[in-house]
Length: 316
Image 1: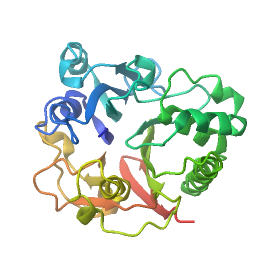
Image 2 (image 1 turned 135 degrees about the horizontal axis):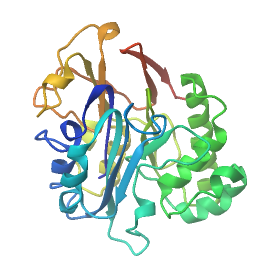
Image 3 (image 1 turned 135 degrees about the vertical axis):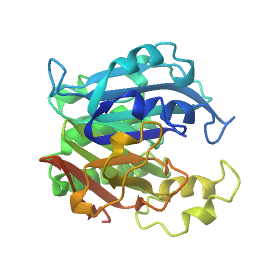
Image 4 (image 1 turned 180 degrees about the horizontal axis):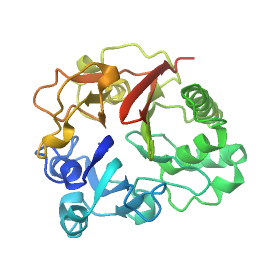
């Protein structure tokens, strides 16, 4: 299963986010969930810093090898600092159509938008879906597609539907994207579950989306994801649990003093200076992690050094 990670806070060494913590993204890639059904097929990150020549655009690094095999990671990352980061470990099934290439690694960032994107999820039958929905895509974004992934196509659809980047704008765009996907899959008689767990970032904002549908295209999915997770790996119930599971958010102060872990000093929400978003809690103590439930969109902005949160329902 893919893993996503995002950080918004004071400028700190990038190695404190991606290398040093025991549960860092690179260390997570050594023991992927669903192994051996999945192959690690790449990783990448985007990082924003005021010290960059173009602070409004990130340094983006993508490579189609397992993160722990990447001999460049420990050479490049220790030289960088950032105040915002977005990172991803890619896992794909062993299928002929799973292409291992730079252009299929996350994050994705097109010209004409400030929003970079990573995805932990799946959209079935992506090639028939593309044929059905190319007409719904803005030509400016469509011509920038380079890879073969479902993620890049979802990104293209999203940017094509996004009228404004308020939380309401994102909520409406994702509702429209899922409706388009479900309608097209039904038309092709290829209806199946869709999992959209995404994180987007700009220099001073994060958006997290936890959305999708069940095997019959239903948006109001019933079931407890933890109970469903006990079923056999690869079973419909297990796959549904991955659709329903939450994303996780950690907010607080003084993150920079914990260089080898993802810890913060807890505080009231309106006093937080740091936000960490992840596919799973990254510390032994899960008490301070907040669940972002299925059917939600969360926006986080840094305003004068403080973290501001908004959350909205995506349910149709």
